[in-house]
Length: 494
Image 1: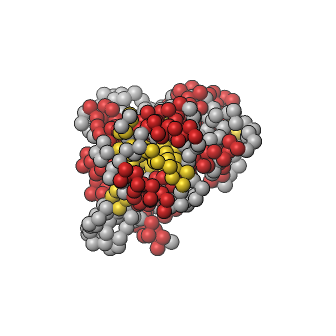
Image 2: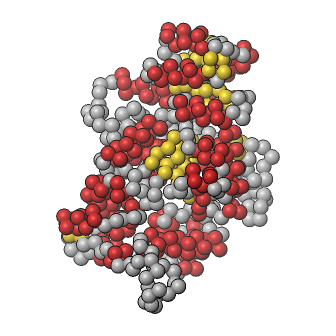
Image 3: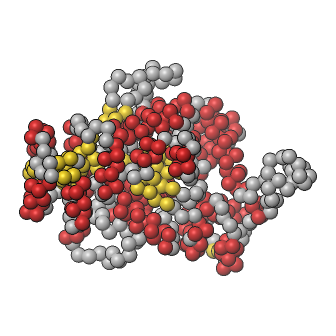
């Protein structure tokens, strides 16, 4: 979503090719910006010493050095301008290097002028919004880095709320929150890594809320829940008649996230052919809908997440190295619950408040004894397992104090010890140590199978499974199952 042009914005263009420099200048002047131009690093720095700009656009290769040198010098002096780096077509490594060095964004030559205007507008908007808070009085509590995104004067409430949902003030969580605030300042792709149940999507939502794109859409995609045959249509859209059942034009996830953030959860589960198509879309920032003859420019920021070791998958040829290189520009590692046990009391309080609110019940109190039991429980399913334990406890509670039932996972026998009929040493599947996670996985598989067989019509799938529409919606949301193209069917069913 391009920001409205600001006539007072000042832009510096640095390029040694006179024709291109003139093209960029004219394009920006037509947008109402004031423009200065330079042909070398030396000329650019002279202009920067004379005045401040709202955005700096620099070519990667200049007669007296690299554009990255200008970027690094600006960062070293903590200048507020956002820097956009121009790279040659196909120079993916240069683009990644620029983003890692702190560039706000990059553009590939030959430049698409529509994309050029969009990126420049975003950079100017970001610079100007970041300067605003500095002009006013210092905010109370600004010294607490994890309390609120101090660098953002815009959407401060939304950003603060998103960070607040990442419950915990342990050292690992403070590092995560500080990292979120830093990475939100650019368009660099972010890879969120962590075990299942640690809250990777909450981190992605916080990145979006703290960024200059917070007023744009946040589109979350569970890559493991989409049938392989539908991946291309779901990601890039499809024209009417492009495949059996395509009765109308439809947008894909890239188009739906235009101007905002596209969150690709479980990115490691994408099949290799789709990885290749995704790589091209990210590099070229253009997608072609199924059945279309032309490509459409898309303006999205990519945040991806996985619980897998993608570096090992690259070595085993299960994941493309070039896509990994492109996605892993900035990495955020979400700590497992066992590494932040001191956050358990706050997590339990926050989860119980939400669960009780959703259930229409008063929030009960956890006794010190139960909290101690939770501290000693392994909780391999992390926050998701903790939430399931508290859900079950609240459902079975009959008093103001909550008693947590650990029996399902605590009583699970060692792997291979018992068969289904209780005979030791039988060749039956081993009983899992984390029964709740196992049950969730089985429930997910049953739901996904029913949804696929009904064309992702949730009403039909619910009838097949003997559930109400409300019940299947709850389960789909709880298990984070993507249901492409099903909204219309559900809405018509009431």
